[in-house]
Amino acid sequence: MPSIPDRGRFNIKVPGLFETVNDILDMPLVVDGDSVIRFRDIGEVRRTFKDAESFARLNGQSAIAIEVSKRVGENIIDVIDNIKSVTAEAAQSFPPNVTVSYSQDKSSDIRTMLTDLQNSVILAILLVMGWL
Picture 1 (tube, rainbow, N blue to C red):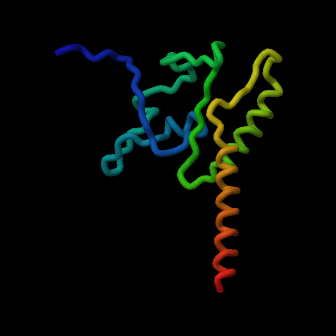
Picture 2 (cartoon, one colour):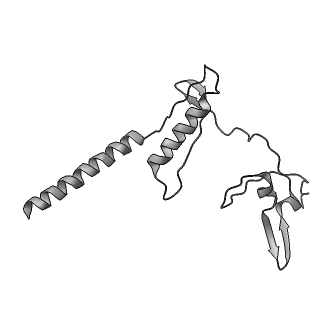
Picture 3 (cartoon, one colour):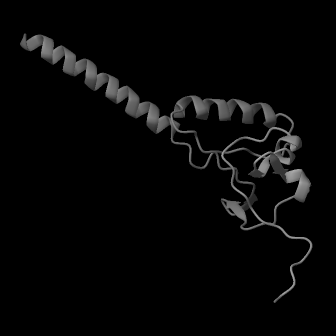
């Protein structure tokens, strides 16, 4: 039987949000009656960089890509507006040679579709009222 190394790395997926390191350390892993084994009992948390799995390039230049997904039930327009305001505030501290761009921003298309939908609904109401 192969020996088990005393150190290892593995990913875990949790249904929640960690705001501090203590939130992670206090997470219960196993509960048996009154006994609780928490993450801090068997592991440690270190702030470090994740190994690169891919490299981002935009228009042939090296880039840093951040993917943002909205939560179910959230308003996509509000999410995009909030992302742009937070990014604009953070970009003030970036070096002058750093540019911020949005590669898959569909907010203008969504706004156009919403306007078209509103116009169609108003026209439908006018046509129905005209028949009466």
